[in-house]
Length: 335
Image (cartoon, rainbow, N blue to C red):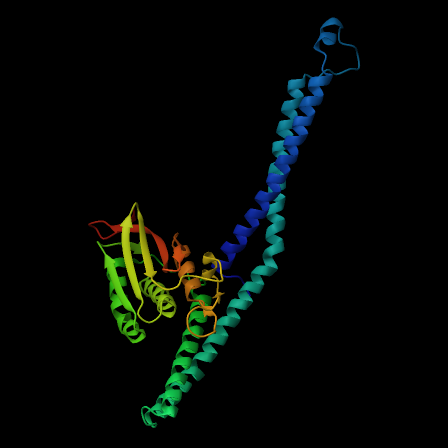
């Protein structure tokens, strides 16, 4: 099983880092040797003796500057050879890791596909059971909660499948207006916010073109808003802002919840990261894998995702993407 293109990029980057580290270590060693040789030659050289006595047969006189140049040249060649050998060795060493990554990704894809069908059947049966119960009764409430649990499990499986497949397919460029698409996505999520008792608004001053597939951008916004909905709490507010300045498009999602606690803010982009419980209940606050998809989607287009601020009065997560623009011919170009 061969590694995917995304896995190959990761492995090559790791190999380059190992090679650079080896070259840096060799360069430091060569610098120490050259410095020691320079000091030795400086202390031992006696130019006066060479001028006073004629050259004797069988002896070779080497100027100290020539010796130092030879040492420097040999050191440079040694550093280059060490870097090349380190790169080749590192690539051979990480090859089994690439095969393991490919096998893991394939397993996640297969498992996700196999789980989607029984989950769909389970949801259908729960819908049927819900229709056959009397609204407002305990059993009706239990069935409704089971449907929510099944929907959450289905979203997790879909996230796993998206994670496993999004990095294996090299998608062509697709220039979309982030401001328009995000406003549309937020409108679609407004009923969810109303149900949770959370205010949801969006603000964008102008068009903001980015190189990101529309469905991927929708998924990014859904994950960010869904995370804020889960942690803002009833009566909270969520504001989505889109700005385009300095060749960058910044998408910020701010809430006035209790902030990120019990975990480093940067780690919420790790898969299945958990923070300390806050507010009602005793369960830990899970960030799932949705935010990891946000970071991966941004990184795939040369952007990033980070927590710009967090505290007792709320959290702001910002996704930054390179801005693109369209010429009159319709051909997308980079800002």
